[in-house]
Image (cartoon, rainbow, N blue to C red; front, side, top):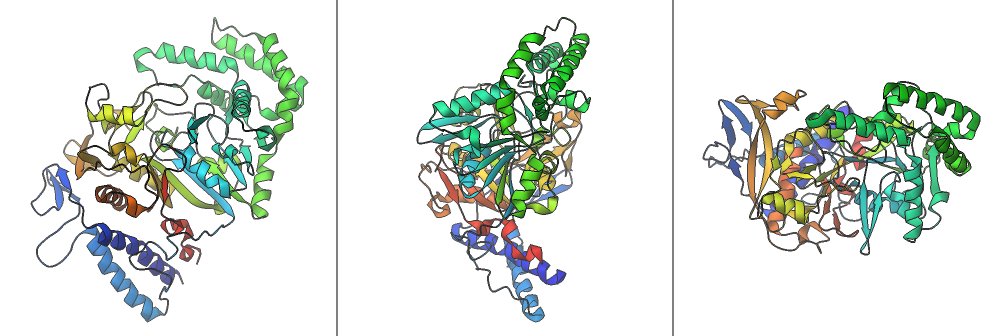
Length: 544
């Protein structure tokens, strides 16, 4: 049975690559490095990086050619074993339901950032959440920022899941989140003013989630200022100091507000320890206690055991959507340390930040821009100069409106980084990808893709952990033709210009993960959904 399942999966993976290649033809790729004349291997001091090859010996050695050969052989073996998969639609996607059919399976689906944040996760969550019963945040705090545009109106979220715009969904803030309650309540008030009423009645906060206090934010700023030129580039929202209190085991949790005498005792101890640790830090202890006493009942009404709630929802067949915050390259363990956030915004946070078993996770959707951005300090191998008038960097920054939702800082911009994306895919196990802001590349004569890393003359096959090594990385690029056509009205893959299609297919080929969603404009509906057939989590053979 294992062998049959493996063969079915291999056949499914081979099929779309051949179909889409036949639809748009082979992409003309110019490799920005020393390449041989057959459009084959990048040769760097004896190290070869395999690319697509078109040779004249009658044999197609390209990735698509090899997949075609594999699929033909798999089909023969399947017939021999009697496991031929009659549901696979040749030349039309991973399965024959690649257009339309929705299998509303109960379970937990996850939307994660796969780069350095700000990839556009909220827009996908907003779209998907209409079909989910529960939407949840599991890590981070108000340092996250998601912007949704609905009928020309912008909604900016920092603590609340973007799924709050679905009036039928219950929104959870899990135990892995750290919450600045004044910001949280201001966000609810902002929704009310924008016409989203009764949101508070649909929000549940984990009793185990830790509180970010104002003095945490003050400490965050003090520590950042002391670092001077070596600053991390934090949002100064108090996230790091709040997690530090949590790990030091003197933090205060949301559930403590239900017993205010206990809360007060813990608060006085915590403020005293901070004022001792940071001479000159002033905290209005009595004023803060009065504030939290005034909101304690309101917060307690939203507080529950989200671990029990989530698992009960799963057991009752409800669909649960997790909205990741930040992104994998900002993960405290996997990111470009120390230029990272203070939590784990990768797949592991779903388990630890919500209290569920890994067996309950279904789809894992990685979100990536068609290019790359990051806010704050730290390595950025494919970075472009943004401040040069008329430059590609300026184009990406201005056309892409690359200013942080939380801080308003201009984001650094660069080309799509395939080694970084492969690393993120390896860690998270994405079942499909959401490629956002493809429209921002419109108008560029050529588009580059960071294909591989080289360090001191050798190809690097993993993401370096050392910052010095990262600073010495040389990126090997491919260049593909751009397009000038407006794609904001595209609603199917076939609506895209041929060169835009080729770009998407090349990225998909390099990463080995199907791209299901393609963002082609800023508005809520400016997105292409290629269908559930482009999601590996819907491959039934994986359950055999």
